[in-house]
Length: 82
Image 1: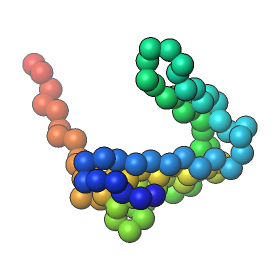
Image 2: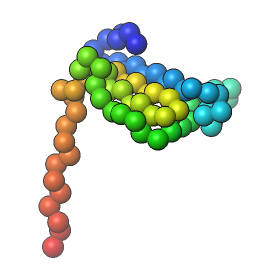
Image 3: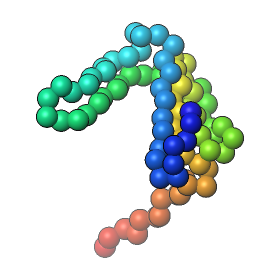
């Protein structure tokens, strides 16, 4: 996966079979949308490749997102409302 700029994020989805693809849609109308849905199956491992790509490996495929370790933030703890 090639990084295009510091603000843009790339992703790739690699499925082991076309049977794992649930939906792939390119809109022909007024909307400029793309939808890709599928399943990577049971989680095998989630880690960072070279600290710059989040890689989520499943039994049936792999999802990669151009996202660095240093960009992940823990959610702030919510204070219960009384």
